[in-house]
Length: 87
Image (cartoon, rainbow, N blue to C red; front, side):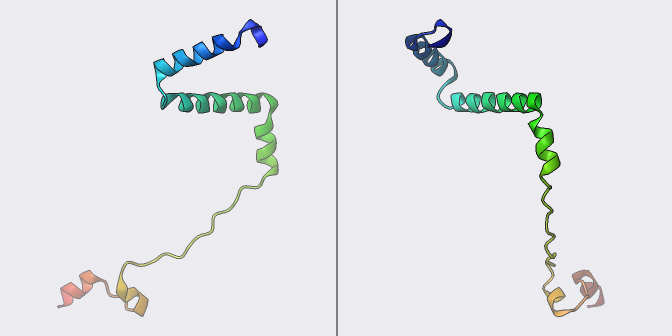
């Protein structure tokens, strides 16, 4: 193995890490380490700038609003408060 580290030393190190941090925490640590390394690599190579300038940002389509008032669908514009004051 590189750097003069044998497979047994790596296994012992992984076992110690498993005992210290637990089985739930190790995948989270691996993900965050990988994400940090990827961000560092992208910032050094400038990939983030090239991607953001060539890729257009998607636009979000606006959906029609739905009125919670059932009378709004029939065209009546009276609100409940107006009906209560009249009655």
